[in-house]
Amino acid sequence: MYALVDCNNFYVSCERVFAPQLEGRPVVVLSNNDGCLISRSQEAKDLGLKMGEPYHLVRPLLEQHRVQVFSSNYALYGDMSRRVVQVMSSFTPAVEVYSIDEAFLDFSGLDWITKKSDLLTYGQQVRNTVLNYTGIPTCVGIAPTKTLAKLANRLAPRTGPTRTMVLATAADWEPALARVPVDTIWGVGRRYARKLTELGINTGLELARLPEHWLRRHLGGVVGQRLWRELHGQPCLEWNPAEWDDDQLQPNTASRHSVTCTRSFGRPQHQETVLAEAVATFATKAAEKLRRHGQAAHLVTVILGTDRFAPAPGPKTHTAVISLPTSTNDTGMLIKAALQGLRHLRRAGTAYHRAGVLLTGLEPEGQAQLGLFSGSAADQQRSQQLMKAMDGLNARFGRQLVRSAAMGVAKNVDGLLQKPVWAGRAAHCSPRYTTGWDELWQVR
Amino acid sequence: MDTAMLTSLHDFISASLFSTRELPLFGCPVPAGFPSPADDHLEGPFDLNRLLFRHPASTFLARVSGDSMIEAGIHPGDLVAVDRALRADHGSIVVAVVEGEHTIKRLQFRAGQPWLVAENARYAPLPIDPDVGLLVWGVVTHVIHSLAGAPAAK
Image (cartoon, rainbow over all chains, first blue to last red; front, side, top):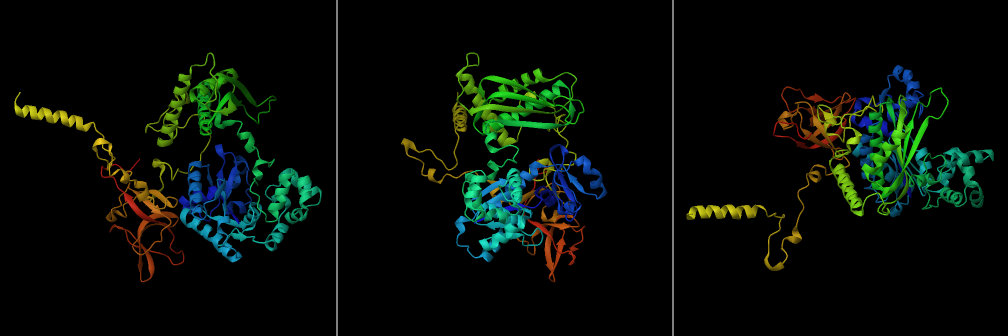
């Protein structure tokens, strides 16, 4: 059996843990740079606010109903997510974190639980413990396969103390499948959903009733076959629709071939120094990611974006590619290349709305061939030691303790790093209640 | 050079030699390559995290901002560890939710009714409205108080 535990309106729930006055009031959380709605309380949903709606469009409605608005506070959400996972780990050693607010619990070691009522009790126990220990409400779906557990979670009651749904046998999941449109089945991408509805297959049950060989032939071969089995209560270990779902913006396989860091600016920037500090910062972050994955890059692409909504024709995104003499994950070398790209790319007087650094041509680190002009083996070793020391210090004493001066060094009166000029808008951010000494949660 | 001076000079030299030696916890020098009998019992340094965060997933640090608990040794600026996994009983110091705000008080049951009691004579005990009910956020397990006058940790 698998349980899918899904945190209810996760970002809003995190905010409410530390601000109990928000209980029962409409609350929304905005995406990076205060762009659009990414989390809504039930009260906000009831007002008709939709997921992904641009903030500037719904602002009058939010003000009219006195909706509490938050910028996203990922330091807080990340810490709360870690705590939720830690609590779930006390129920089974096999917790598969699916996203910041969802995780599969593998109950296959718990075969002694066979009665449906016992499964329901166990699921409720998971939910109650997560709620008591962290303050985060969840819904739990339990079924023999992940696909059916997703379905069970979807159908679990959204209110009341239970919020757990068990689909233990075909007698449970067949009526459940009949209740849901086919495009809500996990793994049926948008493309297949269109194809299926054209063929008159509208519900999950109609899909499940098709023969196995039909799904194999028409829904992506072995993938379709796995889907069929998952819908019939036979778990497939390799089942991971995220890898092939065509709705995914960035498939998992592609992400292994590149590392990227891009941001929208809070307001347009044209100054060379500001752009250089931003690009150096993105190169640093991308380099850190690269080292975490034990990779090195051959190519550095610098991206500058102008106003997407500008009426003037022409491309809104501009890129410059710098190829490195040898693959590297040295922050200094990558910054140098990125700044070189920026000098090529930047047009004086142009205002840029976003920027980024993309590292490609990846290979495992330590495989670089020595170039004729690119320094000795001793240099490379020194660079590796320096990066290791830097990552170690930053991991221990906080990110950006040791940083390249190219990222800019502005400090305010308290000696804390000032937010850079280019930083995204986060006008409504709550304190980092659980991760920042100077922003700690307060009690009277 | 007289004897006293020699002695003090000897002290000086041996002391300076001694101070360069690092003493591992429980380790002691044993001649001729025999391992220290204490080596098998080497223990790591105390880890305060493990003491303060018995349930790391459910324990939160908070900074105290008022003086209502001063007679319980909880001062403004102190840090408190609040554990959500523990059950609040009569006498527990808790963080409770009162009128949408977090407040730190001692929980008492008087004639079966819950009260939130300050540890400061200037604050009156607060009965819990039975219609609203008592909402305990977590139980305070430790207080970290800095004696140097500065707030605990920054």
